[in-house]
Amino acid sequence: MPDATQLTCGICGESVDDRRLLAECFSCDRIFHLNPYSTRPGKDCGDSILGPTLGIETYCIECVEAERNAMLPVEAPVEGRRRFQRVDD
Image 1 (tube, rainbow, N blue to C red):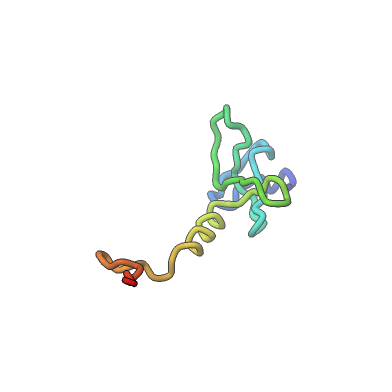
Image 2 (image 1 turned 135 degrees about the vertical axis):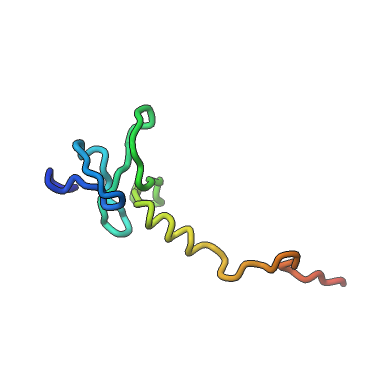
């Protein structure tokens, strides 16, 4: 976790007074806003997930979006065209 001079979000660039409102991205190691409280308002520049082995994993929004884009199909189907061809036996 950063020291007192590094309490700045690496995504939006805003400073933070409370280090509990920051998290470190598991993918790129940047520090970003992540509100740990569901009952209090706060800023989120990322997300957290329950990982398969490491417990809670935190990711900045840029890494989340990059992962989502990587999962998109490379070539979208042509409008009105079926993806699969029907085969009659």
